[in-house]
Length: 249
Image (cartoon, rainbow, N blue to C red; front, side):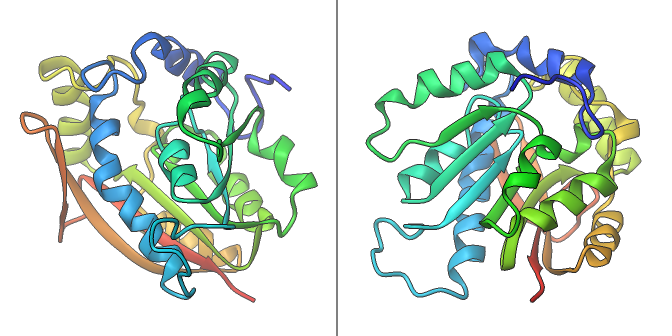
C-alpha cells in the first residue's frame, strides 16, 4: 500500500526524503551523517535487546528477534540488523525509498529485511503485540502526530519489548547546528530536510511513552563531528539524543 499522507505522516516530508534516493547509500551523499550514526546506534540497539536475553550465537546476537524499523528509508538500519540475525520489517511511506531498500538488500545474504510501503497506522492493526523491538531512528522529528505514533508503537510491541529512538532535541543549539550550520554551511544534511517545529525534546518523548505504558530505560546525548564523519556519545542531550524504552507487562 502506498499512502503518502496520514495522521502521523507529512506528505511534504515524504517527498523531501524521496528526492534523496539516488545517493542514499553513498557515504558522501545527502545523508552522510546517517551512515556514520550506525557506528553508535546499531550497538545501542544490540545492547538494549540483549541485556535481558541470553545470546546463543555471538555472530548473530539478534537471531529470531522481530524488529520493526519505522521510516526505514533505503534500509540503512534494517540491513545491519538483519545481518545480525534479526527478522526485520521495514516500513516507509515512500515507494521510491522502499524500492531502493529492496534493490540494495539483494546481495546481503539469505536473511533479508522485509519491506513495505505503508504507514504505522496502516501496519499496526494487524501486528498487535507482535514485535520484540521497534526502531524509530531520525523519524519522530518528521512526524505530525507524535501522540498517535507512540500509541501505535506500544500496541505493536510485545510486553517487555523495546523501542529505540534517535532524534534532534528541541533546543536553539539543535536548530543552529542541526539545521542552519548542517544544511547551509557544512552541507552534511540536504537543505530543507528538517523542520524545527516538528522537533521534540526527550522529556516530552518520555512523558508520552509513560502514558502509553512504556518505561524509559535510558537517554543518552549524541554529537556529530562533520569533519571526521563521526558520532560520539556525550553527557549533554541538548543537540541529539538516543532513547530506549520498554513496554511494561
